[in-house]
Length: 171
Image (cartoon, rainbow, N blue to C red; front, side):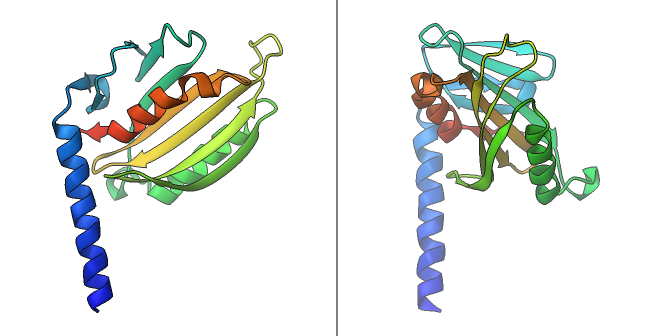
């Protein structure tokens, strides 16, 4: 019993520390997604359809896409359903090699991560790599997707980690 209480206290303290740390930084509002991230000076943001796209002049062919979807009983989408639907969608991509889902540790939300490589039909035969994180907030599930040409995912990996680590639902 004492061990369980210590574990719960440690979890509460970690969550509190995560909230305090991200609350002190300047935030970039992703209003279409009802979310925010820590402001990163080297990122530009645009909206296409129902997604927010972040890019950097440092890694021109790398992009980060953030897209929300409703989930829960009211929307007939459980976290498990979204995990399996995401996996099926990723596997349906041309020449896709998918790893995951594996549990993803985020300070505020539960989630899973997929890693894959694929060759899009309009890509001229080029292979791309993708890291796809699916986080479950209170109201929405969020797809945070980093895509880059094969061998270039690492050039923008720190920025993607900062986006994911600082991600916060605002609804």
